[in-house]
Image 1 (cartoon, one colour):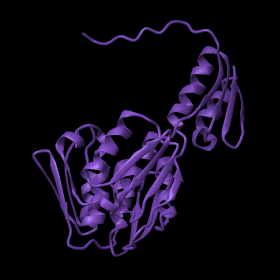
Image 2 (cartoon, rainbow, N blue to C red):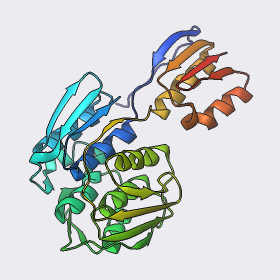
Image 3 (cartoon, one colour):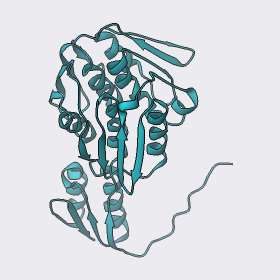
Image 4 (cartoon, rainbow, N blue to C red):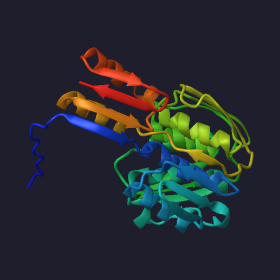
Length: 280
């Protein structure tokens, strides 16, 4: 039987909400903690199933993980594995992000594909950096005695492939240039976290990213970007139902297109540094 969603006319929406951290930022950043040699503290992490599964993967790989409210503490010093078991890898599509981090840190990675997203672009990027990368029977195995910097052009601006290429490039000797990179705010957020950990990286969030690899990273304290999808959903809900909402701990710049469109539709919107107020 197909599922059904019944939507009834809503009264106007009124009140205040706090926007959670972006799922699409926290997942690659959690994978990136494997590149660090000392603990990381991540604030504004949503308590959702994908984050729980990612922490389970990190624990399997030997990391210590603790949550206190919306703050995660990751200690990667016990990291000792380079393979993600099928049961854990299959728990979410984003598990493929561990390939680049594992390859950079250990020179090898193995992961059973969770399905849902082709990873051809990811494997092409790994090969450009000097790794062997093969998929057989639903399992990807990557290996490199030594990764080297390269100029690689992604066939399409894939978010996941850009993130995996960034992580793998940090373990490569020399400079890597990623062309036709994805430009989403979450890419810039990953880049900012890596720079906070000591990476020499420029251009994250633009079509061209330059990375100087081969440098050990240290841990950092970092706050995850607010979720632009959640933010836009609340704004559109108020626009549809009427009323007045104030969104706190938001990032107005990441939703500029939605804010502009709703303003053109007659909504009154005021933006502060980390607040958005909408009235319709």
